Image (cartoon, rainbow, N blue to C red; front, side):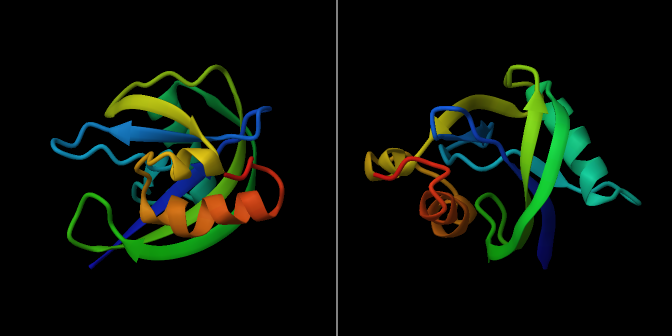
Length: 136
């Protein structure tokens, strides 16, 4: 079984990326905001809905960043994450199943902040490599 999700890479002016932590007992892993498509939704519609539900923000612009496959952090299944770089309007606030927000960079990983495999293996290294996020 493969879980198909749409994720959002949101950056701030300090060279950091937004990650979220969902309420999953016994887990403290941060992941990128986003979620599963509802029937008939496009990636853009999914991203807009999920960011409004999870963060209370609106999507201003989004550009394809990549598609990554890794084991799911919270379920016994494979994860296919279609990721977009997203500009938002509004201040992100944890809502819905989100219990915490954090802004991370390369130093955050070095300090031991627990992030999901898509973030750790694909998204953050690419952002650091492109000079968009501060390195360790």
